Image 1 (cartoon, helix red, strand yellow):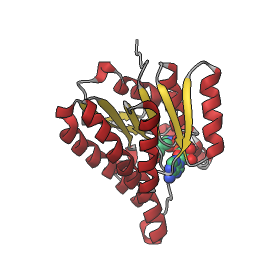
Image 2: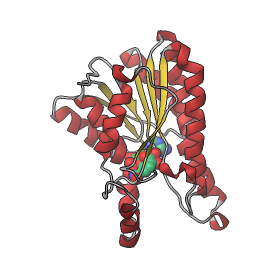
Image 3: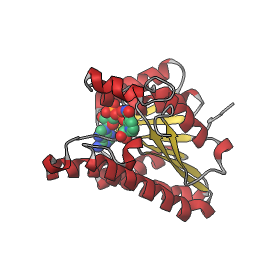
Amino acid sequence: MIDLSGKVAVVTGSGRGLGKGIVMKLASLGAETIVSDIDDRSIQETVQEIQSYGGKAFGKACNVSQPDEAEEFVQEVIARYGTIDILVNNAGINRDAMMHKMSVEEWQQVMNVNINGVFYMMQPAVKVMREKESGSVINISSASWQGNIGQANYAAAKAGVIGLTKTAAKELGKKGVTVNAICPGFIETDMTRGVPDHVWDMMVNKIALGRAGQPEDVANCIAFLASEQANYITGEVINVGGGMVL
Ligand code: NAI
């Protein structure tokens, strides 16, 4: 049984979708959760939902693509709780286009959130983890990191997340901090719900288990990585995609 009682857990982009599933799972296992997003209303809704089943949650907005805001956010969490034990870098966006049609703005927006944002959050958070010689960072990459038509920006950022994860795992291992990446496959959230029916069917056909994933499928793996049971696992990249990439 996973018990996260007494652990302080930050999940970025947790107002909805995968992040919401993750933060709710961590709270259900006893963690003190910090729900963070750029969207205030979704933060409040998620906090209320967690509190309604007796979970511990505090909400605070943070745009991870702004380095000063990320630093200030981390410092505020540390001032309030004294530490961060679990950091899940989940916030992400897509701006899909074929490369020859992709605007510089679409490239930069995705880089700013999906890779720069992970660094901006990790840098101040791992300082406190290094000092107390424990902590767990889980970065959300994507099955698309290996390349996907129409996603040059997204795939490049998600591949970057893996390089950052492995480097951080090597730098922080002797300090008792684990750093892992998860590659979700095709998970039912606002990011995927908008795809045309034929694309949905094509994606599901690629999945060995024959269904799109749910946020909880990913959250279960994250809960394990965040727990004491996983403290000898670091620098790994774990596919949670129902066998989409085999
Ligand atoms: P979503 O679009 O449903 O939710 C993303 C959340 O991040 C939203 O609440 C949004 O407000 C927040 N967000 C966006 N920009 C932000 C910023 N600058 N700072 C803070 N928060 C921000 O997306 P979904 O599907 O829940 O995706 C979550 C993560 O999982 C992303 O990193 C995505 O790339 C990744 N992923 C999702 C897959 C899927 O099939 N849904 C597959 C593989 C990876």
